[in-house]
Image (cartoon, rainbow, N blue to C red):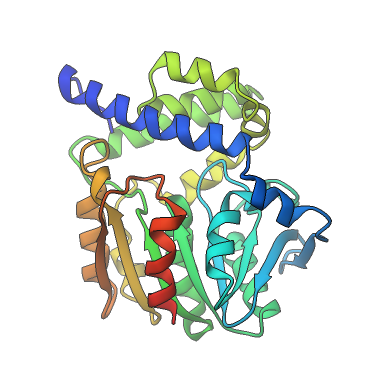
Length: 304
């Protein structure tokens, strides 16, 4: 994601850092409406094939939509989107294994995360639409490829595969370093490494460490290795897997991601070409931290 060219890297770092700051400080202070909606609501649990208990929230009425979040996210991060979709769909927002209220079972495998999604689909009646964002989009893609007709429609927003020059080597080096920090139980350092890898300057990372969101991020640090596994050994686009997707699919990226994350556009283009009959859309004015208000009308129309 980074190069030695000073001006472009500074621009990308500042843009990405701004997005991260907004995202994580917002996470520390959930909107009042979402907090009120959660108050007194009983947590729901489904048991995955390996016995892992997966926590989820269920909101609305209509066909099922499962929301799959990305790195360092909990189900509460989907609260605003769930509220906006709930008028026409039953929205399942869940904590991926190892996060929030969900349990975890070692050893980790991507297949087990696919089985978690399958368990949610089965609890929803046997079929569902899926929306995935970032590494959650990569997981949603793999679930749709494996689960066939159980996934009716699939919406993907910026799965962060990258085939840019040098990206594979940077990715492999990052994975080795992250795995070492996690093996040494240096969780805070692992989260800081992740932030630096996606372009956040030191001063932004320092502000995050002082924010109320930081302890929750550190608690989820081991799951960064899970997201890395989802994206694969070299982070290349999974065209073979994409070709097996049967669900009607929408692949999206944001117009504002083109500057800070230029690899998102060719990744989305390549995925849309690989998935049979896929639709392609650029969400104007949006970056990686896409607004629920901008996204909801698109998903309502697509899933309808």
